[in-house]
Length: 379
Image 1: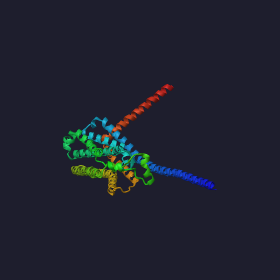
Image 2: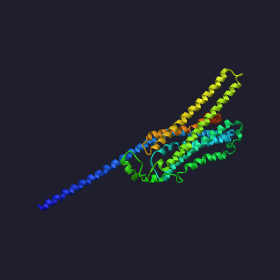
Image 3: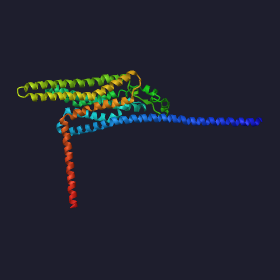
Image 4: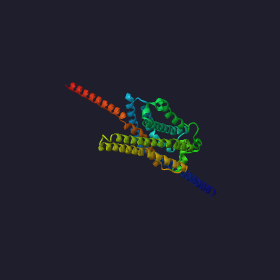
């Protein structure tokens, strides 16, 4: 009886042990299923964000690239446009072209991604340099045109025209040096080293993303210190935007004064209808410039202000979709400014029109020649 009882007790313990092993086995499968579901959910969220970014930026980016290429080609093909003033504008078009290429990557700068620190530096520094170079060239073009309008008799004696190569070099090198400061050591590499993984809404994915990816979480805080961001926004971006607005207002005021002088000279000759036509043109010009400034610069100013508010909250939660939309609309609107300046100038649009007419004429000639050859062969 004792042997039978011992044998039955041993079989019962073995069955319990196998049951525990099976439960732990199925529990392991359940845990893996939970982890895979969390990763799939996070992957689908990132895919939705990527689709939103590309849907907003790719059409604008393609339009910016093609229009800039046409304007650059028009200036390069016209010998009459080979002057220092147009060299500044070509530099602006090249910077705008680079900004259009980098436009799909700029919204990713505000999102968290698993990257190494060198890759994190590259994906943040390069788009930042391109946008700063674009902004410096835009200020340079506005300043050159402003000086030409304020002092029209000394147009050829401006130091910008005599030293235009030095001015263009400064417009590209100064933004490059400033953008490379994080690569020279002004960064938060310690924050990047302490980051285990990118923060997600799901804690399961957060605890396993480092094991799955093997890389640290790349954020803008890891590359740009708060002092660098404050210096760029309030030391570079804000003065540049204010200077462009001030020069534009000054040019409109000078145009208004010149219009009044013209009206005084033509008061004895021209009729009232002609004077009203001049006033209407000036009013349309002011309205167009104001609407263009509001449509292009206000979204970027709002995006910058919201970004600084989020920075002051120090790690508060933000709306990723709202950030993507604001960054795409803001940066894309600013990148359209050189296109408006170029398309509003007939000196740049007329060569493009001539080029299209030549291409159309050649296409028609080739089609006519092909038709004549086909008819000859048939006959």
